[in-house]
Image (cartoon, rainbow, N blue to C red):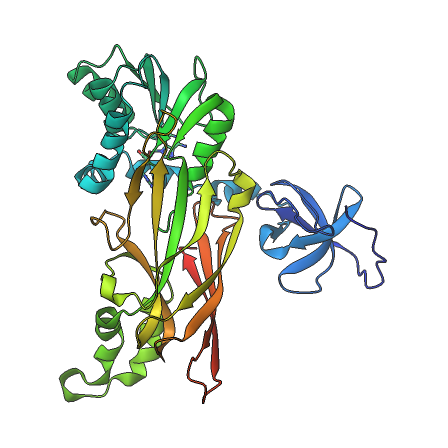
Length: 423
Ligand SMILES: NC(=[NH2+])NCCC[C@H]1O[C@@H](n2cnc3c(N)ncnc32)[C@H](O)[C@@H]1O
């Protein structure tokens, strides 16, 4: 574990507060919990500091710490101003209106996939105990009651939509089977453990909103031994791509609008339009410059909440057709294993070769497009880092090397870019 370190450069240590918990992975990293007060002895780099907690010393990630605000009289005021790191009021407030539920219910690809899961497992669902986590209007629970005979479905919904969900259950004569419970799933008391935990938790780029944390906490607390997770697994897919129309619309536009030269605005355009990822991007299959690759695969039975802090993966693409490398596009696929051993799984694929969904795909634009040619290789890493303060947000960092295949130029172009989602 942590080793003692001579405090040769130890000016008086400063006290910092941990904004969220951190589990050290290296032997010299110090683990701590949200709210811990750490003594920072040295700041050898902007990313890692040398700190002490309960007489143990080790490296800590600086972005998790905040200088301890001096105790002063208007602390209470400060507390009030401090926003909830989960932003639950705004988050569950948005799900208390119909807009998002209409969008999700109108997404036939998404909703039919869940219906197919229930339908194809209807026999095995007989007399089972089901939890529908984040049931919204209760559509998945209603499919269970309509298409199968579970003994009970606990439809859990934290937003105010839950009172309407109760009405929908009654309106459709399903009160015998469906029990609607309002509250955060990870805080609720259920009368019993469940055989199946079903949830539609996926956000843009799979993890945004981090509702998946609630699913994992509920799994650990309520899924019985040998119980089934739906989805059972999730994969994030990445591909280097062209984005000519988006680039023309946001960047090339400034070259000659109405015969004038507006190129001095292009740095502004890059900052404003290419800094954050573009949600709801529709990539054409022809825009893919290489075969897409499943860079991250999550097993919903073994995934742990602490694994969500930082997920890193390598990629290696071989350019299949010459074109302009404008950026990367990401999407996800989830699988629902059959309740019968050997039964066929159901797949919900949000990629360009499947029926479009309300998620569409996520586009990460490079600052400058690069011409690439058949045979070139694009290697690198993608790192998803959860925001230590705003717990529903993350950053996505791409590192890439482009190796030309033509022997005469050994030009290897290297690039890196971090995209906030959204903080
Ligand atoms: N696929 C997504 N990105 N969002 C679609 C599902 C989100 C639904 O789950 C509810 N919800 C989200 N988290 C929770 C939670 N921890 N407990 C209960 N309901 C929740 C939320 O209020 C909304 O109705």
